[in-house]
Length: 417
Image (tube, rainbow, N blue to C red; front, side):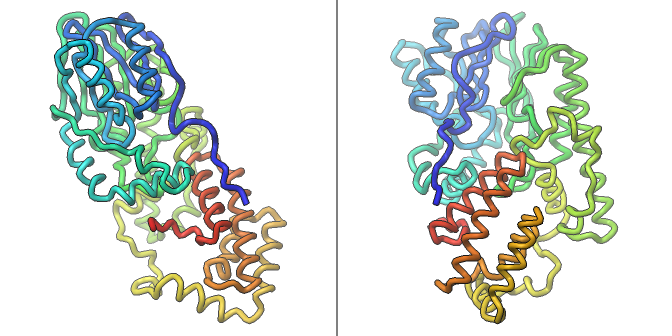
């Protein structure tokens, strides 16, 4: 049984800074944060996850400049990116500086209220998605509220060192970008990553595919000569920025149109996933690879945006408890070994996903019968095999976390108990 997790820190991309233009710097921590030197003082986007990582970020900034902190800004409202806020505020106080402004988009407080209400759920989802042991995030998901919010655009500073914070709804409805008009440098935050846009992740609420495309078009319309991503290398040159952002927006709109077309033909979610074909010229380029998310996730989110929760099987309208269903199905199978043999034969043929569908006839049942235990063991092994076959970081972790739970006897139901 393997419960090991990767040693690589949670979403940490490195340390230190990288100057991309005079007075404009990437600040590495949880993702790539950003620092702008303005005539009002330093503007920092994202304070990091806290602890030693945030301390390292602070020290890196002080190697750049001794100017006071003017503003600490939330790139978006996801938990963790600004867990280090108290350390930055304490740093300013220790220097005898005025308290920096703490700025976010006006939608962030609403998101934080949701997260407070569902704190145990958020903690458990993070443990599974990032494959961490139970309780790992108990002290790692502090919520710190902004002091000041804005709607569309907020300017800071004057003249050549003026910067703008711009609403950039994308992964969240509270994401922002930072724009330097004089130097034509864009920090895209959560709207810009080096893989397919993170839409439709299995544990998250709906994300608007077309709105993300609209944001990319709006950012491109600014005419950046350099665009800094939240994750991944910067996009250099005006033509390349236009190409990457425009291409991504076009691919997202194509996906929306194709899913709608298939829904209008009457296809359900699983039928649609089986039918849809992703053109390589749109989805085969490097920055659309499924390194974190996956295009099938986006398909599901688009489908969910126009459909209810029902999978169109009338049996699922008013279901029995999962434990009762699993037990009844297993009891109905008189030759359980035949199920195991059939699933194993499919796996041997390389049809591991189909083998998983078959083995679930037994693997979801309660009890200590030898065939049930064997089904769970096989399912865990095949989940690890599937994890090695997919590109998406999220999919890999969900497969592996599910296998961990099966081997621990918790049946991979993602209970928050």
